[in-house]
Amino acid sequence: MKGYDEFMFDPGKQGEVKCKVCQDDCKFRGTRYGPRSYASAMAGTSTDFDYFECLSRNEDWHRQALALIQEINSTPSARLATMLREELQEVLANKTPTKTDGY
Image (cartoon, rainbow, N blue to C red; front, side, top):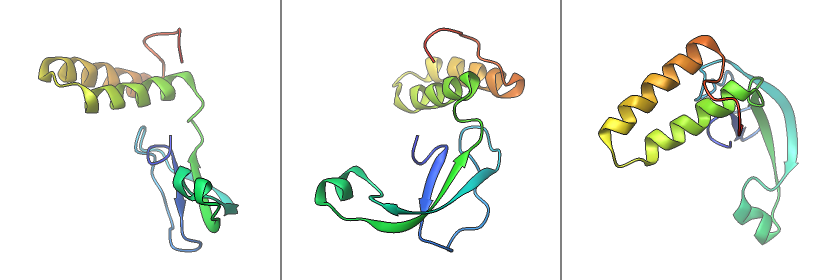
């Protein structure tokens, strides 16, 4: 998801990029040309950008970790957030999902 495990920067402006989900180094996938957001796509504007992505982003454990982070950020419950953080730590430590369906 853009901003978590995939990133777009102005060409040549960014060196090392860390995944905000698992903290691994993201891989530079090259300079691309195109819209950088939904709004720019709707406006029909395109620019050059350097594209980085986490190599684990398509793994089940990584998708679950991202879903847990999003849930932590959206829940109004402190207790639920604490439980979700514990599960997130387990998923990241083992690089194995705790739930195997739906990712």
